[in-house]
Amino acid sequence: MTEGSPPRVLLLVEDNAGDAELVSSMLDEGLGQYQVVHVPRMDQAVDRLRARAIDVVVLDLSLPDCAGVESVRALRHVATDVPIVVLTGSDDEALALACIDAGAQDYLAKHDTRARNLNRAIGYALTRVREAQVRELQGQLDRYRALSSRAQTTLVTAAIAGTGAIAARDPARFEELVRAYFVLLEPYLAYEVERIEVPRVQAERIITSVGDASGGPRDLLDLHVTALDRAIAIADGPRARSLAVEARLLALEMMGLLVEYYRVGQRRRFGQGERS
Image 1 (tube, rainbow, N blue to C red):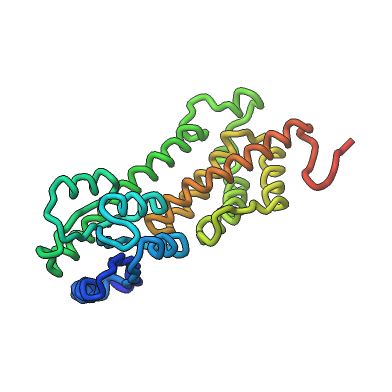
Image 2: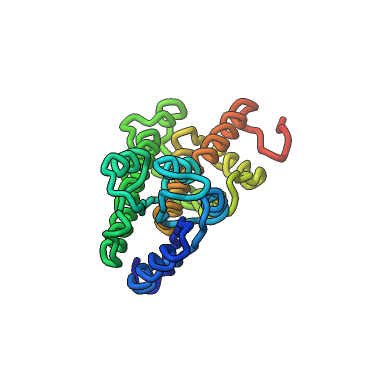
């Protein structure tokens, strides 16, 4: 955590009040790195994970409504990317390996847990998940770029329309389009709702401008990738990955509008009917 940044939200799932207090006191030695949210049951943990952003989970394996490796699976089912550190009174190595296989990042025996190794385990778990997210995010962006005109030596637009990519032949117009496209990405950046409704009028204006400039699918991907890069630059780790994944729906919807634009004829303007 960088200086001045808010504390990470840590979900502590522990039914024993004494153990929960002990773990919380150990975390306090981490100099305020974590805002601890404590729940004693698995159903409450699931509700919390669905209701708010959680950065890391510390999980006891002996809960009233769930126990053992099934506890890890239950959390992983609703939170695929949140790092999980398991705490247990058992020294069973097979159980530890099963928890790791089920998606936990680390495993600590309660009788061996001290403030230093608990904070270290949580830090390592966050780092490992963050590194995996960065790799996956980079893969997503690489795939987008491979489809955009940036990676093409022979542009589809050039071959069909006798012109180059909008980004190359009209940088000023491309920059205006990127700014407009970024507005469509802002709700994804805010991460406020699960399903974003794309503003139809704004989207159609962008597509009309792309079409009027003799742009094609690769130009639209150029816009998507450029605006996405800017959005990711101001997003945190988990949100950046979510943005890249969820915004694929926006790219698909925009591509559908572009197909519609060309299907009805290049001279059509969305929202203005047909021109004779």
